[in-house]
Structures are given as C-alpha cells and as structure tokens.
Length: 323
Image (tube, rainbow, N blue to C red):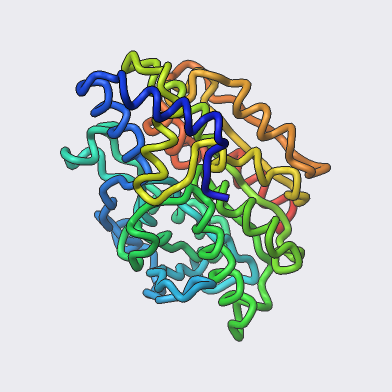
C-alpha cells in the first residue's frame, strides 16, 4: 500500500488549488519530516570507556548496508544480547540537536544512546546497535525517504538474520529495544516474518507513534490542520506513504512477546495520550506495561533520554525475562 483513497485524493487536489503559497510551504515542510537531515555519529562507546566493541556492516534483507556496533558486556561477552533500534531522525549515537542547525529545528537537545548502551553493558548485556537505512552512516535507499516502517522492517529482519547466523550471537538470549521508527519497523518485521522473532524473550518499546497523530498535532501548531489530505499528497510526491500507513497501531496486534512501553503523557509531538494508549492496547502481548512520563511535553529531551537518566525500570524488566 502506498496510495490514497479516491475521496482523499480528490480533496487533496481541491486543497492544492486554494491553499496559499505560505501555507503550502508549511505543508511541504511537514511532509519533509520523512526526509530529515541525517544525524551524525557524534560519540561512540569509547566516550564512556566501553571496551572490546567493534564496527560491523550488516546487510538489510534487501541488501542495503547497515553500519553497526557490537559492544560486549562489561568484563567480557555474556550470553545475553540486546538489539537496539533507534528513532527518526536519529542514529545509533543518538540525536545531535545540541550541535545546532539543522538538527535543532526539531529540538535543541542531545539524545545520548551511547550512555544507554553503557547501562546495558554494565548490567551484563551485549549490545548490537545500528543505523537504519537513510540514517547515520548506513546506505541510502528509497530515494532517501523514510517509510516509517514500510521499508525499514527489512533492516530489522536483516539484523536478526545476521544474529541467527553468527557463531556466538546465535547462541545468546535475545531482547529488543525498539523505539519510535525502530518500534514501528520492528512490529512490521514481526508481522511479516513472525518465525524469525519467535525466540525473542522481550522488547522495550518506547515512544512508538502513529504518524496521523503527529501530523495532526504539528499542523495544528502551524494553523494548517485542515490540510491533512494535502499532507498525504505531498508525502506521496516525495515517494513515501500516506500518514495512515505509517504507525505502530497497524502492526501491533501481531506482537506477542512481553513488552515494556513508555510514552510522554503531554507529548507536544502528539498532543494525544490516547494515541500511545491505543497502540499499547493493540499489542497482543499477555505481559505488557505502559509507563507514562509526566511533568514534561518534550518528547526528545525527556522521552528518549528517560532510560539514560533512570535505567532501573528497564533493567528490572530485562532481568525478569533474560536472567
């Protein structure tokens, strides 16, 4: 699927005729979220003194080269592996909003995933983390457009196939840490190749969104909320997908493993806690928990950094299913 209904397309074409040039530019800017500037590798595991890590290049299921790090547990490789999937428009290092333009246009903060790897390796987990296609240092594909899971699920599949074929990783207990784009992509991968993920013991799944809600919230901020159909048309023109085809709720009913999810209650990116609740409720997992981060509206600053600042909940969850 990558099309609009006849009715939505007709409405988009009508909107295109009457929209002002200024508002049309705003619409195009919102659609361009799926073609955001690449975040760069601004720190690596050496920054926190992690030892024994090394670079990998792993093919996606459709052959796109994915640049990765393997970081063994502190004190030596263990029998437990966490596969870490990042968010849009980040990379395996995190998000360099503190470096200024163009990244601070989304938020002017640092998101530090490398610190999160340290929490994991200190707790006895090996970590395999990588850049999705069109992110970080990984290969370009699909015209540089992010499909918010519609293509990136192939990256999740390629990484898991690599693990399953590896002489030592294939013998490890496996957990997933799949957030935002990474969560949607992981849900899609589980849906499309369920047998591949049957041996995964649990998943941390932070901040998984549905793009219809994000576009609604962003367009309201800019006074163009009446143009949802035109946003979809601009997404198609970029070579992407309508908003309704990019979201965790589409694939969530096929996720059955234990899940720990967290969301920002008053998230300025969604303005709708019911969106996160809906995706969580659709998960088929018998054992699942949703943590609400309160007292902030900042998805980037306080949502993606939550594990880095307060690792106890996540480590307790992983220990329950991995030890």
